[in-house]
Image (cartoon, rainbow, N blue to C red; front, side, top):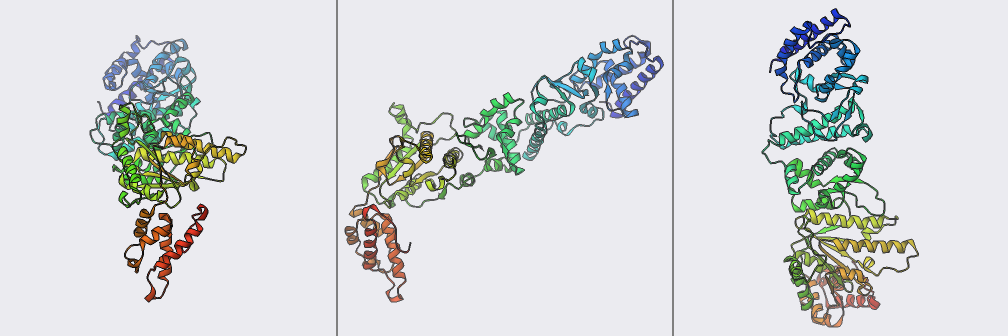
Length: 633
């Protein structure tokens, strides 16, 4: 390509000659295609044509004459904008001839050589390549009213400069940061574009130059990313995520938009997100599918959206999961433990534990222990799939083929008196499965505010669903003291409170139906269990009051040899004399040991009578099934 000075000087000379000819002829008709006045100019203009071959447009020498005139006016008189008919007047003269040649300007506008103060959106496509036709259309009627100017693209070409979006188009990305910089520039241009209402950029509508320029800027950044990515061979975390989860272009744009807002520490709602990928209200409505529970971003736990219910939500904010931001930015995958902590950080429904007790530590009769072990094996080896093949089982543990997670569902109910080891057994199961334990209860869910309890139920299970999808080895969910939501639904709901309780129970039923992963619920009131809940548990086990043999084992478990005086304790006698649960024995030992520790040093050891004393007190308190804990606890 000729040096910019030579190219612009030639255009300048052509423009000067055109203006000189018109000055002599005034407004007389002139046919530049045949006039001898233009013979020299035509030759110079034709010599320029090869230098414009980079454009996807076949320039004609008449175009060079028009552009030369405009360039001369820009340089000599600093004329930024031109009336279309004034430009054509210099070349062609009388009005009829000017109007007859308006199409020349239309073609230059359509091919990004010239720009106009307004234009019509031809296509909603948000991709554009430099020096290629634009997504805007122009017509002669529009040119009668609007002014024209050199496009930024053409001026950059004349001056041998490139816009930031057009620089290094032929170079692959050399780093993840470079790739992300382009993405963030693209998203910033979309943000600029979204300041305008859809009506201001609707297809077929006349739009102003500022709007059009913002649209072009966004399109150029998008094309830049595609072009450079096509020749890039390095691994990029965002692209790995796109391939891993088979994300659509809209998914990727949403994900990166949320990452950018996360880094900016700004919140965005559903409307903000949908505007980024939509060109109209109709498209915005259709694009809601990208943010619902079936959408890939939500289904795979990459983003968090407010859980939709019949109740209004306190916030419509959407956010990317923190571990995803870290993976995209830091190029470092987050381990399971950190990912779990990040998800749990979003609410205070759960307590996370790493249980150390094993199944061997469970003090139960052998049959009960075997049943629990069988259930664990069933889950470990996905026995449900085998039973399904035998046409014997199509229950809740069946896995949808679209689920990213391979977790099946296992719902266990432990029922029995307080203190019989239900929570301890849940920890043993989690340990046997090689999982952590997250604990919740109704006290964390219920709220005095109308509708808040129902929202909390949805949030709780939405969080657990997200954990199952995103965590490779999701923890066991323990729902302690679940009596309130497992009880039978009320037939007559005259009060708002009764209606709320029924609504919450229905929400629990729906959540149980789709639950993946392991959930254990504990209750003291088996007889009041709603039949609908009963059907949804794969295993219902009663942990009864321990027998004499189990009680002796429990006494030995809670009285280690490190306590002075333990060797003199009659474990068998205590087991036969007092019908106690493991929970009660634990409290008795704590209280008796505390009393022994307060005595003078010579007498500071545990005695049989200490344990007898607190055992009698505990039995008295537990009469009538009252198992209240007493003493120093």
